[in-house]
Image 1: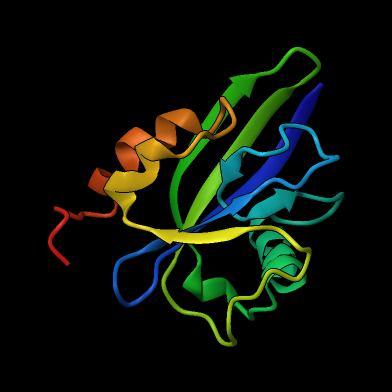
Image 2 (image 1 turned 135 degrees about the vertical axis):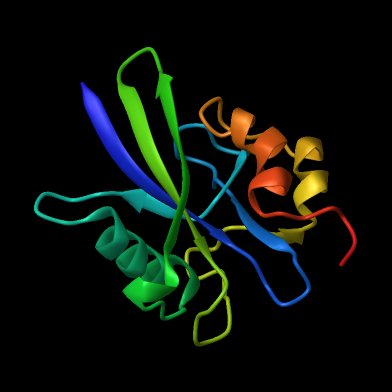
Length: 137
């Protein structure tokens, strides 16, 4: 079974990236991930992200603010995950943990210190280069 999930790399003015911690009771609880969620039937990945970012974080993102960045493809025991990943540097509203999840703003090169789901692990290594960041902010 193929599961389509969209994720977003939110980057603030200081060059920090937002990650969220999966809450207890969910699969892969305790692991950090980029915000996003499942793409529903008849929904584009961009619209799924706009919906998810509003629900999870209380921010408004316009579709033109979402730039395709990369993707992840990973086979879990029960399904195959395909995850387009978008970059977003512009949104309105203040980021909040609307679902009680932990939030962390981290330097892209510091992502290696955070345990993430297997599909996200390769993203930790390539993200600084994709963002064109040298670590000098």
